Length: 559
Image (cartoon, rainbow, N blue to C red; front, side, top):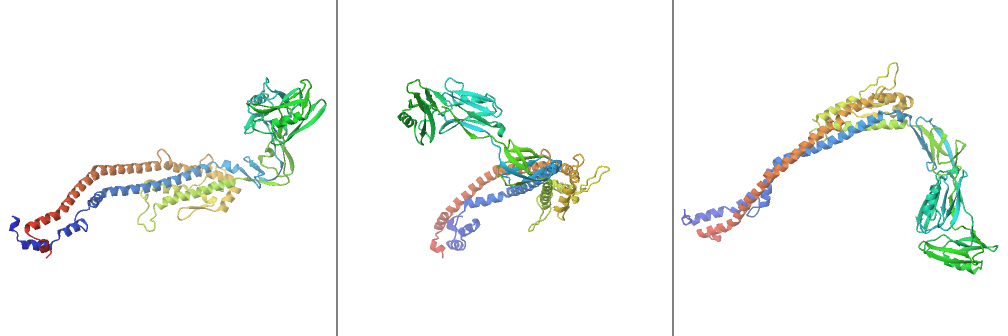
């Protein structure tokens, strides 16, 4: 049929009654002609992903199961750890703790089985270690001036060590090696800082028996050189004597003075000597020589000297009024089974030490078990409870591992100890220790009953948990839980592994679904809707062309 055979009036009537753009807009959900391709494709893909959302919901459930199961596994392992602690009570029941009224002065430890009691300690002085240090040298390897000193121990052993060029100890490093090789009961080391290097010597033992002394003779001769000081350093306030021609003169130095200034001062005194200041790579020094080259002089300070920094002395204290002397600040034997650690001296200030039984440690272990058990059974029971606002039980309510664990935990508490033949016991059940179960399955502890059992019948408490050969309550519960907690093939490990495998399968399924279906579907839908959109965009033009061919004008169409 040609368009010329259609009545214009009929076309006018139809076009005025039907708004094609409105119909298309209603169809695609838009208020203007055309298709929102992105939204249309997204809506279709969303519908196509319905199976995927189901798999993701399954994964969310698996994740919740993993979280809940891991928490229960951790809580169950804590109970098993408690059993291992309670299976070795012989140590804690015999252990002793010591409390000090002033640990800043003295603290202590006590051996297992030490008699409990209270002691009073007064620390008059601490033990100290003898120590000396040398004059400063420019560096550890700088040549020392010619001199000698004698080191003497309290046992009377002494050694005289010469220093200076040509000697075995011509620098600080060599001097330390020499002293350490003489088996004098001391240790020498070189200490360096910004002001130079010094030799430090400290006794290997504290107390008066380890004390030692260092002495040196005044220098007498015709030429003397001081120890080097680092270049740029100055002297401090000091004094020494110089004797020449029978006359002794005291020479003083002031803070900030240099060797050059000191040399000038000495030369101005006309003492029969000539002083010069010199310097080299090791620092600066003072040299004094007889003016005529033959008349000897004496300087009161040797060219290489030592200063005592600490005197070796014994600690002095009283223990329950009895005077005690100790070469060390760790005092043993003053109280049987107790080691005292002296931290500070405070004469006249008494410190109280209380040696007590460690039954409190056992009580803590038992209460820890009760707390950990309540955590575990609470997590398990929650899986079988419908929470407020919910219509279903927990995510593990149908898990056979959790069903079995609930029965195992509750059944383990029914243990009854059987005393050895011919003996009796005051502790056969948890109830004898004041541990009872509530209606919700959790445990509670009567502290008075527990403390009474620990104080009056510690052996019965130990036998209940340990048994005659580690076959008591603790071992019974430990064995019951092992099938759940075994790392390699325990119920928790198997259960969690199965959940993980299922989750991995779902992840693969989702990935394959996205790759093999959704991706191509999205491409196809985008192409289809885009084509439709293009067609719709061209429709007004085509309608205008048709209307033009029919002789219908816009004014006629609009009536």
